[in-house]
Image 1: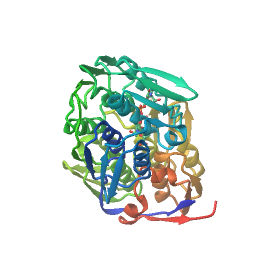
Image 2 (image 1 turned 120 degrees about the vertical axis):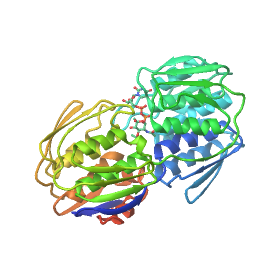
Image 3 (image 1 turned 180 degrees about the horizontal axis):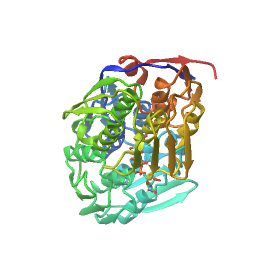
Image 4 (image 1 turned 135 degrees about the horizontal axis):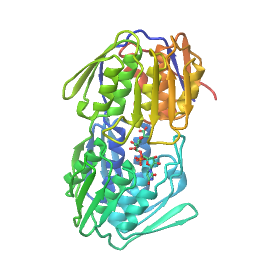
Length: 419
Ligand code: EPZ
């Protein structure tokens, strides 16, 4: 087992190069199953979620290689279209393989991913899309058996702009007969990056990044070469760490156009932010001014930044309100922050954060990926030493976060210990 030992770190200063986006890489890896050609994907950090997804793609029969941050996938020898629960439960994004397998092979047998700590995470909208395209989906003992000779394009309305459902339907519709319209779809930058990748493979997709995506099905797709967009959540996490310690940092390899909501809320909280197209500088002195955040589908405030912003507000001036509208159970880190002395009251999907003078270090644990990142932020600003356990959650989405933070003056180290 491993944990982070974090000590109070005054005003983080320096430059960080941001890695490629985990949430862009995962659907793009699933898209590689759509062709027997070779796909080369650059700028993919070796995160645990990425290596897990690659293992699953190899389970299907794909040949893969991973050199540095460049992945090659060749879907020529796929001979298995079944993923059981032991494989699917490792990473929810494995469910995106369903759309790709169904589209190219007309079938997929894949376990329902089940819930996780932040919510039930149903896949009903994914299945609604597959059935609208003509597939039959049957649940037997927790395995969804999906069949369709040839998917036919149609118009699909998503009750909620689900990122995963939008991606899965795009993957399925790419090789369907005719045109598919996805209305009220997700508009996240990772959706646009997936569409960009699919179009490089020969797909015909327009509208990605808006609430209406049009996919004209094509007969086949070929390999391609692509570089993943920067990770806006990793970038935002480091900005909040610098803001929490009253520092000044510059981030390179960012796409500031993807970070508008966070930039505006950080300015409201008292940070000075200078944005260029592919880099951003944040400086923050003095106390955070607590504000209100409401998580929304893109371009609203990202739910994946909610816990980290709550950690910032824990020692801010005044009272902040956090309204989590996307997931039903995403305040898990409030309990751990309270153990550090935070004053947070959770009522349903709302949390009231009353700023305290200072948090104090203690032993805490990461309950999920972003809650773990929030604990690092709070620990960097807290008096004394904090031990963060169960950091495997953090490693799923941040590549050696302690190295990047140490590079700007953070006092953080990774330690192994017997459980
Ligand atoms: C993606 O998850 C991201 N993961 C999540 O990031 C992110 O928080 C989320 O989108 C929202 O932005 C990846 O991209 C790998 P959703 P996803 O489908 O696709 C409900 C992180 O920390 N819903 O948009 O699973 C669902 O219950 C992770 O990097 C249905 O009801 O999110 C939730 O309340 C965490 N039925 C809401 O929609 C469905 O069929 C948003 O889920 C699908 C979703």
